[in-house]
Length: 407
Image (tube, rainbow, N blue to C red; front, side, top):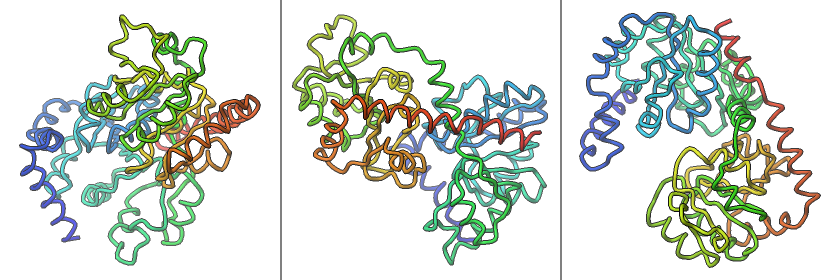
């Protein structure tokens, strides 16, 4: 454990050292300065606290259904939402269904104890991949009921490594691990972890709720007109490299590209290299869409609704750390393509197995996939039916988990 504690201290020092040069590091560091004292004032009268922790903005989409369901159905509880990442905290620090929103403290023994002394949670819920060892040890000492939801485990992870003993012990801190699949449960059983239930992924409830309530985006509908629409969401540079050739090879199809980050250089490249004409979403006021083939979605918060206007979808991130949310598109019955780094996402593997999803490694493979679907209405109808059935089958994960935890 000493090397873990040393690593946390070194990490914290490094973040502070580089913070003058990196905005995210600065926000990570500054956001925790005086945080415990602020919490002590703001949470002085807090009782029946359910603490839900997510790492990032992406993981928030798995934690959000829990926050919303508890807020609506358990009014006697107060909800504390914490983030590790500044990207998540800065976007959701005013989330209305959470009573309190803060960063999780650095995982040192002193900070963990100070934090828990203030929060005094009745229940703690970690989402997906969060295993802070000192926090888990202290929660166990205090006999605070602790859970993890939407977790997924693979044989190559540290828990199954010969040197992963302290991490395996951490798993015993949870009252229940709610995992996404039977494979995770079986792997955990091999190392003697049996406090496990297969519950599925809470994101299904989130995307179903969005799809059922979503109104079409007027600008996108006008841009589409009577044409067919291809939406590429959460793209990075490598995704855009292969998308550009597809766009230019299909002048009779309209395209929406939503970059994951608003990188001006990449946006300008898209506008410049699309032969059929392109326009930014934020600059469409005086635009005639007739001569524009590409709409660049250079704003946040619309993508999940935009998929509702599409006929096909591409999900970015598969040439980097891993693909983004395929369920946001699949819930509308769309065929989805994505890059090669998808295997740690169960839903992507499921979609490939069902014939709804496809992994592509190059512009040529993306073209081959798209060509096979573009003019085959019967195939598209079949895929749409399968995709919708897959997502709707998972409805109710959040309710089942919360009722198991809070009764």
